[in-house]
Image 1 (cartoon, helix red, strand yellow):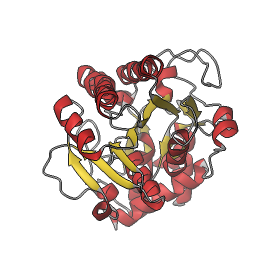
Image 2 (cartoon, one colour; image 1 turned 30 degrees about the horizontal axis):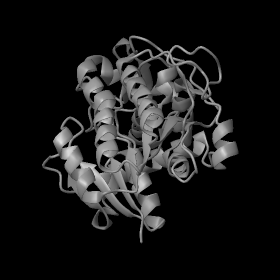
Image 3 (cartoon, rainbow, N blue to C red; image 1 turned 135 degrees about the vertical axis):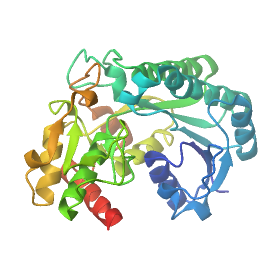
Image 4 (cartoon, helix red, strand yellow; image 1 turned 180 degrees about the horizontal axis):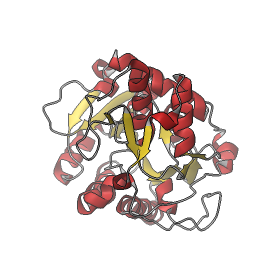
Amino acid sequence: MAKKALITGITGQDGSYLAELLLKKGYEVSGIVRKSSHLRYANIELIQESLNLIQADLLDPVSLREAIQIVKPDEIYNLASQSVPRESFKQPIHTAEITGLGAHRVLDAAWDIVPKAKFYQASSSEMFGWVKEIPQNEETPFNPANPYAAAKLYAHNIAKIYRESYKMFISCGILFNHESPKRWLGFVTQKVAYAAACAKLGVKNSPYLNEEGEPIVKNGKVAMGNLDAKRDWGYAGDFVIAMWLMLQQDKPDDFVVATGETHTIKELCEKAYDYVGLNWKDHVEVDERFVRPTETGPLVGDYAKAKKVLGWEPKVGFEKVIEMMVDANIARLK
């Protein structure tokens, strides 16, 4: 009998890569999508016919319970969230409702309906916030610096409480930044890759808008925040393998998933524009509106435990990820 998996956030970057992976492994894959006018979803377009999509919402416990009741999954992957840290300052309550309490609603329904199912909770390196040590591992104290991180930490702690109290199989992946061509344009890596693609093709004012409602590329330039912020950037396709491996173990646990390398946003700009044969300084400007109210980091993960226990390590390097993203944006724009 094929294993059954249920993914929340299946139309997002991670959900779509995970769905592809599970289909290849012979799973029956179901995913939760919000009620909307969308019938086709770009990230899962090529596999949508193979998926069982169920309308439900992390804000609505009744719909979540119905979805879990229908699927009766062997594995649940909770990936859905309001996942933009900067946006969480504008919508803190909404972020807490979806990212924090939303995860709690999924956990509670799972405990009630399929208590023996294995559960993956998507935790985040943002929980380390104003970091207490560098690099960060599973024992590093959490110190969230934005509403998104605080909501993620609530979900992370609730997951551990359910694991210990009800003996559920719940593993949390503390994932550092991971990118791909499927990244939403609100994320800095995709914004830069898109802007570099526009520059390559001579697009002076882009059709897509930034968070302030202006073209991402305006008069040939992209507006950025803090260029010195450091991040540990990996490839989403690698990271979903770690998620799956966590649920194949004999006992649940928490794992940092990272590359162990940091790069600044300035380096990100350099690499993206270098790749299209241009000088980033001619195309990037700093705009105070895009600087976060609080900056975290430097966030850099020590994935030694994942390597030792799961046999996992990252395969695709930073430069390659940026090149993939620029190529995908050039293809889209053409």
